Image (cartoon, rainbow, N blue to C red; front, top):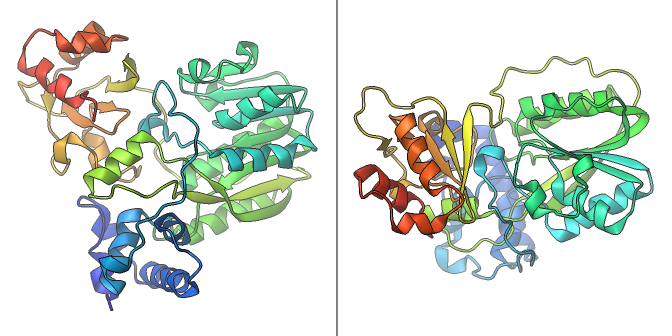
Length: 395
C-alpha cells in the first residue's frame, strides 16, 4: 500500500511537490480513490479520474499504480465529446476549457425557463447553444478570446463583446448571468462580484465551482465562495453535474507526463444563486489577474501563439531560451500556480513554451508567419527561426 509520504512525491516535476505536502489533502484524496475503486462502479480510467474530485491525472494514476499496480488500472475511457476541435485552438493563458455537449444542455435547460435575456461571461458554448436553439430573447457573450467569432458564427456580433470583463460596461442588467471563471479563489470571487453587478435583483447567477480536491485548501476556498454567494441570494449546488472537454493544450501536457489516454476527465459542480438581492460587498483576496493584458496575439495555421511584451530572461543574446523542466519545450502543467509561468515569453496553444530575450526579434519572426503556417517551411534559416519552427511543429 502506498503511503502518504510516497503520494506526496507523485506530481509535477516543478512546483508540484511542495504544494502537495498537505497531510489532510492527501488523506482525503486517498480516501476518495479507495472508495471509488472499492465501489466497482467506475470501470473506466475517465470515471476513476473524475472520482478524484479535481486532483490531476498524474497524481491519481500514480496513487492507483502504487496501491493496486499498473496492471489493475483500466485502459478503457469514456467516449470523449464528439465535437470537432475548436479552430483557432484554445489557449492555456486564457484558461479555456469548454463544456461537453451534455453539460451545455444541462445549463441551458436549467436557465431557459428562468430568463428572457442571458449574459455569458467566458461561457461561449452556452451562449452558442442558446443562440442556435433560440431559447431566450437575447444572449450577450463577453470573452477575451478574439477567435470566438470564427468558432461560433451563430453569435450576433452586436451581442458579442471581445475583451476583459472590466471593459464590459453595459447600460442595462440581465435576468441570468452564466459565468465560467478560472478555478481559483480570487477569480471565482471576482467573477461572482462582477456577475452580481450585471444581474438585476431577483435574477440568477449560474457558475461552475471547482471540486474540493483540485489542490490543497480547495475545500476551504469553496466554502468561502459559497459563503459569499449566500450573502446575495439563495444557493443551490448540483454536484459533479458538469464535464469539461480536454483541450489540446492539456492533452499535450499529459503526453509530456507519459499519460496518453484519459477521456474528458475534468468535472465540476454547478452553483446557482437565485433570487438575487443586495450588493456583493466581500473583499476580493489578492491574486494574479488572469488575462491577456501584456501579451501579443498571433495565429499560425490553427495554432494560437502568445508573445509577452516584455523580456523574461535578462542578459541573453538569444531570442528564445528553453525553460528548465519543460521536456521538448512543453510546460508539464496547466496550473496558474506553476512558478515556471513567470519565465514564459512565448506560449503556444499546444502548451509549448520558452523564455524570450529579444521581444522585437521574436515579434518580427512571428509577424512573418502570422496567419500562414506555410511560411514555416521557408523562413530565414537563423537559429531563432529554427527554434520557433520546432516550437510550432505539428505535435
